[in-house]
Amino acid sequence: MLTIPAVTLGRAVQRFVSPHPHELIVAQCSPDGTNINIAIDITNLGDDTTRFSIFVEIVGEPLGQVVRSATLTTDGVRPERSARVTALVPSNQQNVDCVIVAVGGELPFGIDIGPVEPIRINVP
Image (cartoon, rainbow, N blue to C red; front, side):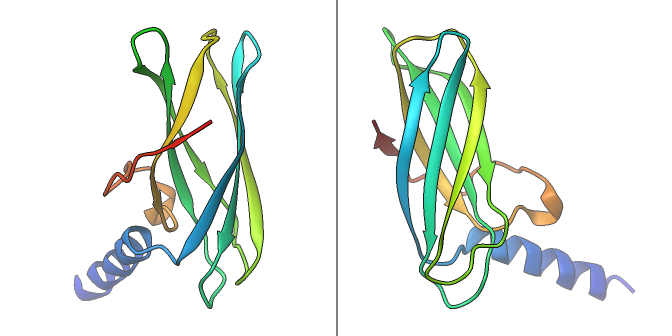
């Protein structure tokens, strides 16, 4: 009786922790006084259409502490195609850096469980 839910959960978690190969380009990470505008382009280098979850931390000055975090998700990205994901994060910080903490596959059942294995990529 519990076999089908366990298998379904296992597959959902596996898709999340093992995303397709990909490339990231940060197109925007800029404050406007009340928000921080984030735009990231992700290219699917895998063989199947897939969804990605991109975990970003916004680091503020002068102390270099995380002031906000965001999870950006894509719809299905076809092989060898790119998608742009955006977020508008409320913050009045003026000097910020965006740090990509991790990239995962599709969120299991749409639930943001956070990054599993942080990679921390600093971006402009």
